[in-house]
Image (cartoon, rainbow, N blue to C red; front, side, top):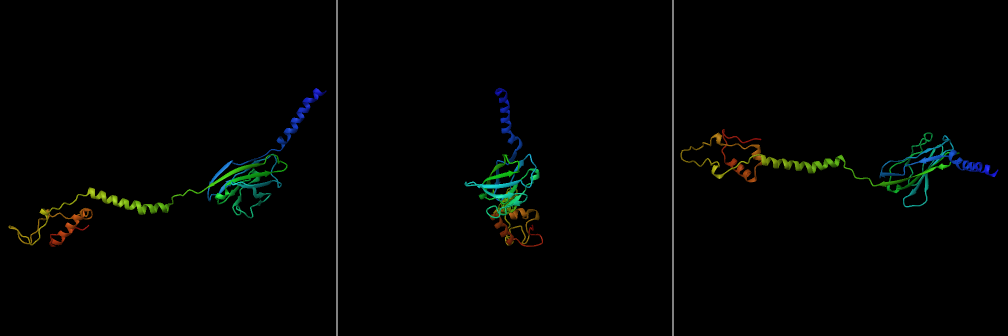
Length: 247
């Protein structure tokens, strides 16, 4: 008798042990870690699955434990309606994103700060489904925001550094490409007063021998050449055969 009853007793024990896990099996899921920059809007995602449809008895609690340690503190509660934090560091910075009918009880943290580093716990209860894994944890790490280059900074950089450098480069290239006008004292123009034998006073060198100064000569000539050019300009007579170079 006892031998026949022993398998039945064992089966009954297994059924009693497994019954709660088969009937009550709520599960809450969140990401293990989140990383954000200072000033970001952080979505604290939390979903759940339950054998029972959510009712007005379903509750959601979000709690926070600082990175420095200490007991967790509940800062957000949901039970048919939302109850945001009335004070503290999260006041005015929590937004409800959840949809219990879809198994979503997420929230968002606005304007994240370095003081928000820590562990966030999402706890869901949906009676009578209250067993299983009703809580899940998120570890949030907020870091300083990386500096970014703005368009105004780039414009200032171009205006004060690159543009002058480009102008200087063009001037140097122009000096190398434009031939220098070489002057020699032996080929310099003589004063109208100097008259040699066989020459008449007032007769100037032929037009073919007079080389007009070009823009390239004027603006890219060396300082010595420039001085000599303007010195000759003062001594040359102005008549109908002489025309000053105009750029």
